[in-house]
Image (cartoon, rainbow, N blue to C red; front, side, top):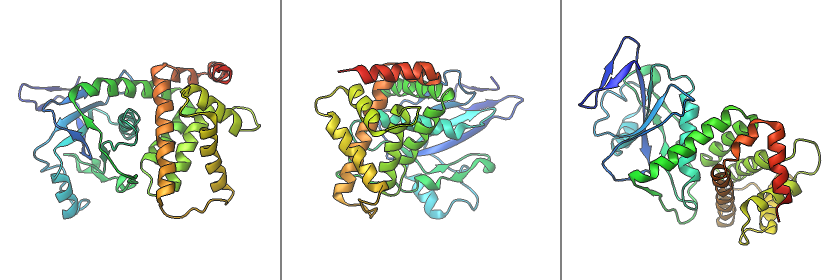
Length: 299
């Protein structure tokens, strides 16, 4: 390890250059005093942690951030920190970690988002435009966290890392999911959520798509409150959008409700796949098809 923490909590640099990127966390309801370090599961040389920050000075200097940006950042006191000798690909892992927060949240509750990357190294600073705005669903509530919540998030993060590394289907599914979580309009979010479901449950061969996707989704959930007909109704919304039978207009209460239903559906499916340790089946086509076959057969 080329950098260690001393007793005062500061980094001691060794011969190699140690890099650190700090992401102030917005909409993050965490009030415990302790920091938390996530394990990387051996998939990366980057360390991730939740840290408390009282002083952002020296991290957002330069022309890239406006005074409004700085004032906005100074309101926050917690950050997601990525650090290591090499940070190649860390942005993707940050996205997966934020996905883990989101899929474990209750219902449609709001989870932490990032808008900026700060660093002592000016070349690592940036504004993250795609998360500058995101949809506010009806009656928004915020997920609250305590220190004991983070180990489950850590385990889910490692599961997502491991599964994505060996599966193009899951790479696409997680990309769609992140885009859905950070979309500007309901219709974008809805279609990306449906893309997640299709990536998870569609057939490899050509043929009808809606019936197997809806059947497998329903059988995985195994919930009388979410029968096949409800899943099929949501799939039909996708078809109505694609074929011009539903206008792609700005947000309305009805459309936001549809998007909220899709978010809950997708998150429940992913939570179950993580809990069942089923995502590893997607790294092999034969294993994946066998697993999907079991979903076809469930009552």
